[in-house]
Amino acid sequence: MHKLLVALIFSAGLASSQTASDATLRLRNGRFWSTVPLEFQSLFLMGIVDGWKLRGDTEELVRGKVALALIPGGSVSYGDMAKMVSAAYADTANISLPIGWVLIAELAIQRGEVTIEEALQALRKHLEDGEVDPPGVSPIDAILNIVHIPN
Image (tube, rainbow, N blue to C red; front, top):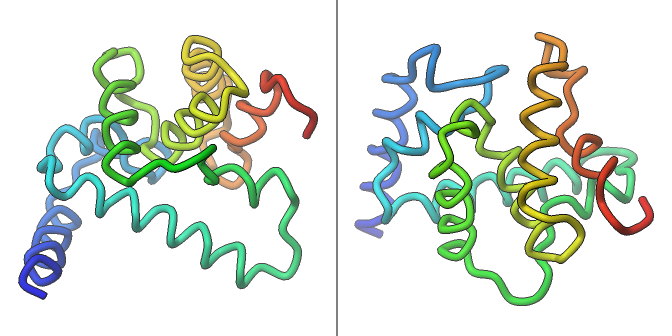
């Protein structure tokens, strides 16, 4: 219970301290990720995955590729996911990519559908070519355009 209270207080503080450079297309990016203490990175990713599940459970029609985007291959802990995301942000070329996008790419890599170079390069290109309005920018399509399995 104490950890949950600390996590809530921490997340409230982060939300209020977010700067324009901490977000890309209104989604938190690597600059924000680098400010999240290691012990809270797993919780942050758990929130993304739970939110994605909620979205899928409440959406009237979920396309298969969208529903599968955040499913890991095999047993992967949130701590493992946090390490994968941190590894991607170790390359400063990825720092502007939203965290959720990087997580989608890392899980596709982990499932063996794409290489790390292909996935992150595709996301960087997608961000460069993308629209400013988030509804028109789909990282899932960017990954699936290079995934080595059928959509």
